[in-house]
Amino acid sequence: MKYTPFIAPILVTAVIALNQTFACETQPSCKSNTKTSSPAQRLAESCYQQWLTLDWTLANAEMLARDNLAFNEGVRNICQARAELFFEGYEIKPFIAADSQQEVFPLVFRPNVDAIKSQIRLNLPKLRLI
Image 1 (cartoon, rainbow, N blue to C red):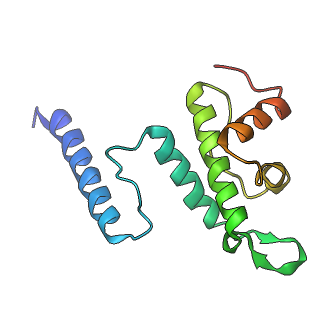
Image 2 (tube, rainbow, N blue to C red; image 1 turned 120 degrees about the vertical axis):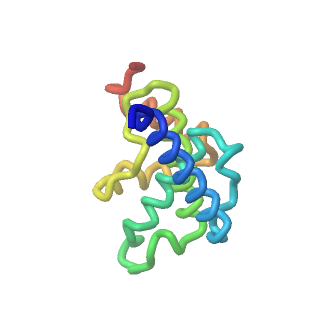
Image 3 (cartoon, rainbow, N blue to C red; image 1 turned 90 degrees about the vertical axis):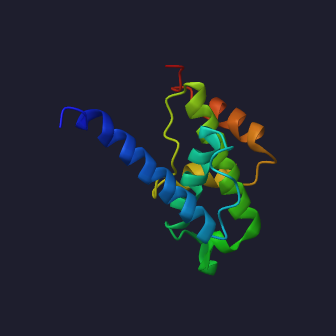
């Protein structure tokens, strides 16, 4: 009983690691190996997966935004940029909120992650390093 505080966290960590391993094997969308990906990449992937659940539509077409390849990749890049800025120490939420379409739409078609990061830094002067 006196070793319970040491054994319990080890068991929980082992269960989580095994769960992630088997979950990754069963999901075809799990492209990267979680052991070799950086925390920023894992956070960006979580952000992207969370965004997929929002079911945003494009304009009046009633087309789901996730079905548009260019928009979909743009959101993936935005998630990557936000995760990197978060780990660089900026006060930014790494996840995309359901009501943040006005913030996301101007960034979606930027050419790359660095361009998105630059635009976020320019348009959010309240950001500062922690």
